[in-house]
Image (cartoon, rainbow, N blue to C red; front, side, top):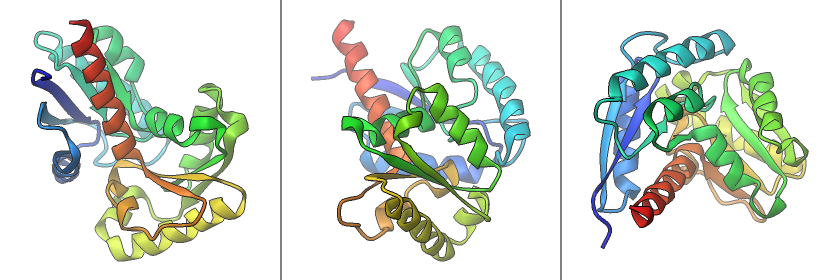
Length: 224
């Protein structure tokens, strides 16, 4: 029997409504031994849309981690597809800090699969291409498919979001992707509503990060 473990969903956006949606999704799939918590940034953008916002989020995450140092959770899930401040938070807290981008890229590339990333906002294309390259997965990346609508706009109109995300996923598959990540906090949970595609696995970046966080918590329990 695994003892209860605290997993904190840290949202570096200032939208409390987004935090609530992420927490609700996590509760749907979390094991009963995981105690879920959530924290919303008190400063910064309501939604991280570009490189400038991402840079600001790095500092925000570092400050939030500093406030948690007295009683840190057992693991943190950072709810931004750009993974801002993951390394700094991990160093500050001495706990696993799981980023949605790293976790979903690892899941998508498992077994050497070619993969594509799909997300909202044109500014994310070069950001994510650089991220994947730095993770050593550049040769596996088929494409980054970005939408005109940003993640927050997609979350506000799920019907339009599903149509746009579906078309982008098809584009990635047509280029040879065997796995397609639907990435971003704003679109969390939408991948499960997309129709299956033969020969292509559709992955949700939040679900991938949750799976990685549960695995990290189990590993830490085994070493305790």
